[in-house]
Length: 316
Ligand code: PMP
Image (cartoon, rainbow, N blue to C red; front, side, top):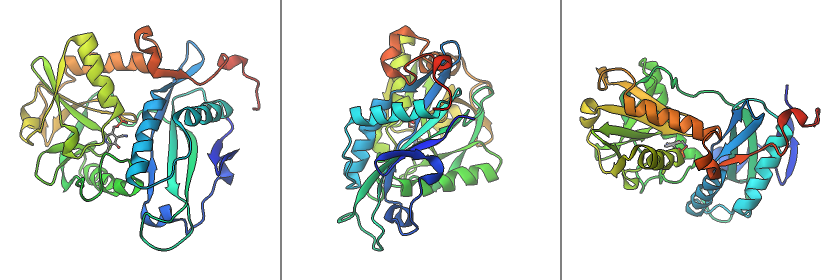
């Protein structure tokens, strides 16, 4: 069993020692911003590749600006801390890395100002989030996506995720794998933890950033791969609910969800009802890139183990 550590209150500590007090502001009011970064285990190389960690840290910094959180660490420092923590933990499987900046003052009172901020980081083993092999079944949620003028969805705020949790559990309790949220104005926004793409002929369609989506890093990755490798453009435009029912293909994207083909929406088959050819191609391109198997995209992959894993000293 690899050792479990966290970065907490400016130091590396064993995970069980990283505890917050019950009066912590972020715990009481959801006033924290976080990221989810994947580390992908490459068996052949004995290596874990972190996927686009700097882009996640840059998004974290933007979230912090919206929530008036002080992030004192630079992208480079965040990367160094993360690489060190992953190496200390020494997992030999896919992992999920959770950086968080939170209002750490132990004080009652709903606000964003005059509060201390702190940064924490932990790592946990993390396999597939949705079944990427057989296609998933989605419903359109009865819960609407929270609006930019309510809680900005482009900021990855912990409190915002109550919106996603309502959607996910409603979907699950009704026998679906995932729920798709509509905006306040009834247009398609995104999944509870994923961006959404439709395939229409030789192009991809995805909701624009102003339709209350989290501006996903996987979304951007897929747009780049579709363009560079398949010559497919992505159109960012508002999508009607009924377009979900007539699309050739549909897939969801996210750090946790990878590229998850959707084969059914609201009890209607998407296209043929099987994983579509474009979704399949994008998925396999994506998995190769993620594991550091495509030399063209190695800039996106940061190796966490400075030496081959087997040569690391045991009992770090
Ligand atoms: N939308 C929401 C609501 C999410 O939580 C996520 C996961 N972070 C995404 C989209 C996908 O973003 P990314 O590809 O950057 O993980």
